[in-house]
Image (cartoon, rainbow, N blue to C red):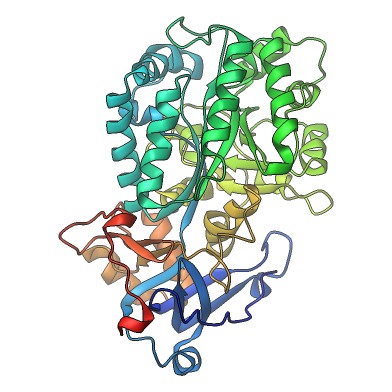
Length: 470
């Protein structure tokens, strides 16, 4: 569980910044522990920030007197202040083809996805998509994402350059794919693809808030040689916090294909494990049709899993079974993913709406406590960043979303019949509105403000105010 010891003010740093209103943050996993012990909620709370980090969080009447120099406070009525949302699996390069008709996953890839991704060899095109992608994420309150680019270095550079402008904590990397896809996307050779990946890794990993992932698209689009070299690269940099990101057990036709291509392995997970691609900070997207022995491996290797319900429903894939993932004797780290462009929107709260329905189809359910845990701290745990982001607590990076409790005329009327904060949040996620987020703070700066004339602002556009200037 997270601790809440206030940090001292840095007298030589930037001025203090506060956010006041209803505050909700999670400190433990409600799938494993008593829900009441897993979160802190303050009906009139205050988040105090400085130099991109959180100094203190608590009841306004208790916290505010400790900071007499705090004069810059954003106050929000009828809203909930919570950690920025975390998207554990999304393809920024598929933004231009979101909402395209799909018959099957493989048909959808061949007809829409691969032709779109082929365009990212053009840096200007990649820059334009990256700009729009970040605007969408921040508008929805998402402050961290684990992101597929595509084959070309231009797609990686465009993504990280835009992330640097906002100072967001992001994870991405070049996609590795050297077979079973169009020539326009194929790596020329396994060896060259790994050399380029390592070059990009050295350029971007831990540069500011950027983090790098080694990304085999999925087992069928990499030769055994490419998977072997990717595994060696991942193991070489694993102690430096590098990620491995791929797809796993999404749909039965995919699993059958993997069985044909790798008949010597007993299951899909073992393919990745055989090549050294399973370990801490390995993040597996989808995991809809997972055998018990695979869950055991994911637990033992401390992997993360991304639940992508919108995409799974849209493409008619399998149904993620959280009760299997969160089995008490071998729980797996789970977060939410939009999986754009298979997913049909960029909003993590709207994904919770779909996740609830998927669970109900299996005679299970997801309440608001578990759901918003998955959207925040659960995502951070899936990415092994739970000591950095995903909670509002002293020492954490100051990434914050402000969710309106009255985003529309009808929701305003509906809220009068909801009593507790979690009843209200469940209504919000179930209605699935697209304008729930009022403001997004990245490292303490309000990079998105729905009410501001310039809704989106890069970090560099904010003037630095020193305490001594006050």
